[in-house]
Structure formats: structure tokens, C-alpha cells
Image 1 (cartoon, rainbow, N blue to C red):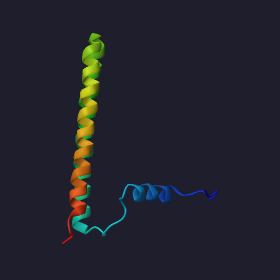
Image 2 (cartoon, rainbow, N blue to C red):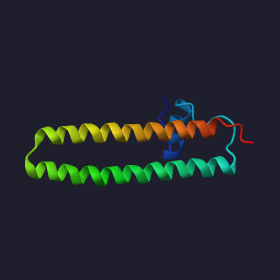
Image 3 (tube, rainbow, N blue to C red):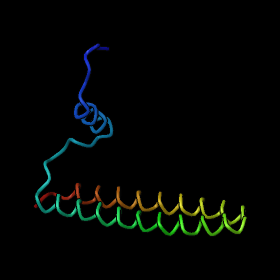
Image 4 (cartoon, rainbow, N blue to C red):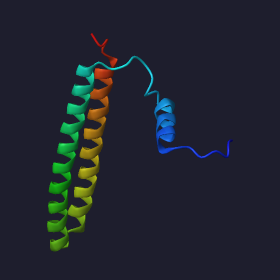
Amino acid sequence: MTDELKTAYELAMERLRARGEGSGPPLSDDQKRRIAEVRREIRARLAELEVLHRTAVEAARAKGDAEKLERLVSEYESERRALLEKEEREVAAIRAESGA
């Protein structure tokens, strides 16, 4: 192990390489654009989901409905996880294209 400090960029690149990302053929401009669009769409849907979740949680807390609150949290986590997995799948599919 080295005593040398690493920059945030170096640490991020190490994590990407460890996950198998950051390697492979370079992306075309079209692939980059489509990946950015997928990420933008998912981020917007996540933001919408969070706003709706917070509103529902506040209503459940106001009524003192602990059972509903627990269900809302579970549903939120499940929907959030599903959106993030969808993002990963779509980005991976775009990256897997030949770049033609």
C-alpha cells in the first residue's frame, strides 16, 4: 500500500475499473447523448417519486398510521431500486452496441 494520496478522479477511475466500467471501446457521440438522456429521464422520475413519497409520508404521519407509513417506505425503496436497475440495464445496452 502506498502512502501517496490520490485525487478524487484517480479514486473514481479505480472504482470504475473495479466494476468493469471505464474500459472497453470509446462511446460514439450518439451513445453518449442517449446515455445522458436515459440518466436525465431516470433522475426526473426519481425526483417525482421522492416528492410523491414525501407527501404521502407526511399524510400518514399526520394520521398516525404507522402501518401505512411502513408500507409507503417499503414501496418507495422498491420503486427507487427498480428505476435505478432500469437505468443500469438501459445504459449497459447502449454501451454494448457496436457504436456504428
